[in-house]
Image (tube, rainbow, N blue to C red; front, side, top):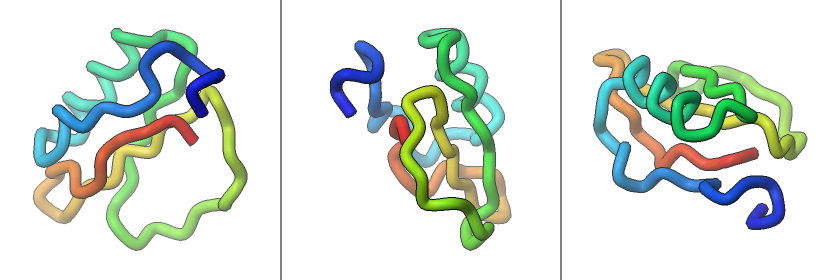
Length: 69
């Protein structure tokens, strides 16, 4: 994962607003696609250096540390 991009994990964004977090990640690294997903949404298990999944609860708060993958 460290070989993908200089910043690959954003622990400081935990519990923030998911849409704002996705915008921050895109601004910090325009090479990744930050996607906001509701907790429990089915996803593929493949690893991609250009993807960040932003997991949110029903209130829109980030529930997992966003990371490349």
